[in-house]
Image (cartoon, rainbow, N blue to C red; front, side, top):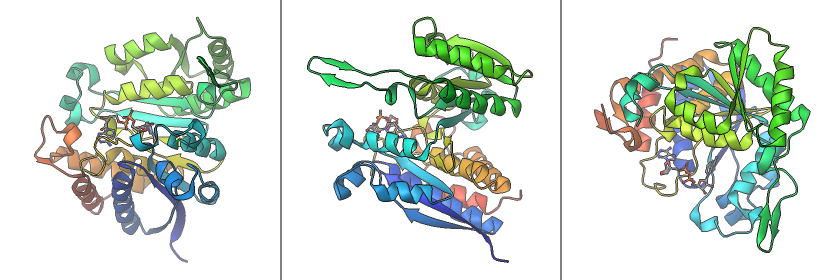
Length: 360
Ligand SMILES: NC(=O)c1ccc[n+]([C@@H]2O[C@H](COP(=O)([O-])OP(=O)(O)OC[C@H]3O[C@@H](n4cnc5c(N)ncnc54)[C@H](O)[C@@H]3O)[C@@H](O)[C@H]2O)c1
């Protein structure tokens, strides 16, 4: 019998996207070699580069390729040169469209603090040591998609809209995740002001009845932003809507020391999308200094969630921890305890090399 084979659509995108995805592939190749499975990559276009080549930010071929693969690995999109395009041609519209087309409604963003990076955070050691939380963000509804939206002369408007089924399905993801962790869900909303948040809260409470072992709390988003910095260890699973999750998880990235450390998995109907939480970082693109670890960790999530290759996924996490322990750092996390400040490509090679030594 031949090796197991998995089909991955690879979307490098714009800015630092190609640099960080190349490193994730380097590490994936190392782990597939070690564990004896095959990865078949198909490249697809998205974002500014797709607009430049095809005239649209989300070509049909990309959707087709994504839907016909076992998983999609994605870097980032966006850049100054596309900022003045009409909204429907902007790179960000392409990404929102891909998420919608793939039906990936749940974006899972684990926030873990590596002991080796504790001093890289701007927060105090005591506050962040041992932080281990997950943000479950609703990804294809809410204000980023709601109708009506648009601009009418001197007025512009967007609509935050949620339906009960949309809230129920994301709530189930959060409660199921909590069951495998510390059995706590904090639902973040703005129910004191927004009708869509009141529906969110009512629905989450109803779903919680199916998970009696899980302790459910609620928090207004402004308080949650403060509590994440004051005492992040109080959280296990945070479930929230699209825009609040977008903002809170960037905030949470500073617990881990760098936005270049936070991966994510977007799951839903069928095929999942695996991507770092950060953007295309045009300010550092092409300089070879971007941190690829969030993308490599996203690849590790892909192995776990999409392919059930648990040992391979753990080998990547172990390899990253080893690289950090031995003092390898990219510039964004090099303020403290760095023995070697590495380029994007060097830290990718270091991690791939450790993967080869994994005994799991
Ligand atoms: N998923 C996505 O593709 C996505 C997400 C957010 C923003 N964007 C787009 O990215 C572009 C830039 O947006 P932004 O500047 O607000 O956010 P950003 O996340 O790209 O960058 C914010 C800051 O973090 C730094 N940074 C980000 N990733 C890093 C990494 N891996 N290593 C080291 N430093 C890193 C950047 O240099 C920058 O200083 C915009 O066009 C935006 O629309 C795309």
